[in-house]
Length: 140
Length: 442
Image (cartoon, rainbow over all chains, first blue to last red; front, side, top):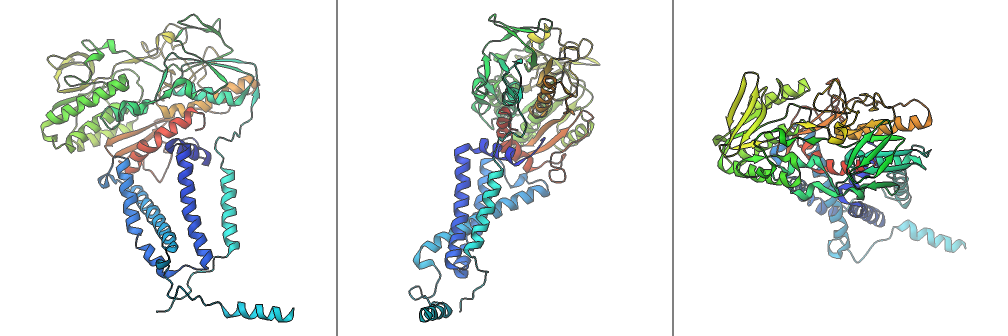
């Protein structure tokens, strides 16, 4: 390979999947990531119970990603030959697992029963916000 | 159990910064953005051959030259992805895998396609004449015809034998590669002796005969029929590959897999009825019985080049490769003529990967000539072969004129190791990279 620039890589990926499919996949991946981040921002934290539940899907995502790659490439675990193969396998598993965790977290966040909050009806406002608003009104 | 606020706050500002950074990165990575300058010229450039080399150079020249007339000559309507033939030849893909659209689909709008066969090249008159009588005068000529397979050189062989009675010939084309797969399947079921050959001439992809051997051995093993099969590789020379370190590695792998080797055996004749292959050896002719025989014929330049003054007079007698400088690919006697790809008379480089490296070199020297400056790029003989050793494993082999290994991913992808990742590159990345190369983008 003469030069592996980003533009070459993108051209190759476009040919691999077709321009529409490739950029749709990129958009889908970005969307899941974005939704994940938005959910985090909206709730101002990582809801640990929900995240734990989401993490349970990680092995499934990892195995599914690896199985999918083996299936579409006519290969199998017996073909793992050297350290780089293990690295690649791990990277695929991590990508599949991580992606599924994020997607699960987002989906669980959309279902009211699974949000993981103990008292979904009552949300306690931080006391400082209410006080400072009251003070402002007083001053004005 | 109480909920404890664990992770840092993800403020809107942080999110905005992340997104902004991502957009900046994405904006900088627009594919195909030409970094090189365009050159004004009214030059007439003729490219004979619309395969990998012809198409790639045409795309690049159209992008770099403003005002030039670029004409490509090729009678074949379909563009064939030849690196895929090995996969079709053992049934891992079908014939449609290697037909990647029409020649004209890959050409840029700024190039003219003459869908006829080139019949004559006259470098003194600087003219190419087609079989249909079209005359194309040129200021620059790029010979990218590819090579010719001389099937007639093997006595008793004809292409309609392919796929029947144990005869394979995956080089002959997509349909023949499919028929070869049928013969391979039949052999895997019945067993017997399989003989693999290669010609005594230069050839395109010297790795393919080895790949076919490895794949058939793997398929027979997977089918549980290895014990009833004997696999024999007949090399035309004293080695298995022109690069010594690779030849040794293949020798070791053959030994591991129980593949027998015969050296200095050149296929001369086939008797398809008695299933006997006759070889020329230093000790005289030798007959070997086969149940499967893979035939690869001698190779040479096409007629239009053979009949011209372009080939080397004193090298590669009988093969007629174009006499070019190994570093610039410019003709040694006619400075306005270049040759790219299989037809070029250079010691290595008859692979698609070599074309990928040769094209920018010719682009540089041709433009340099137009601009009256010295060209800068040099072709170092880069050749690449993902040598498949099993279904699912390959060795990525890359080397140059000096027989040095020149890995693209040093320290990451070991060159002489059978790796899954190298198979993945062949399965997933090679064809898209080839297509990007055709467009002049890779």
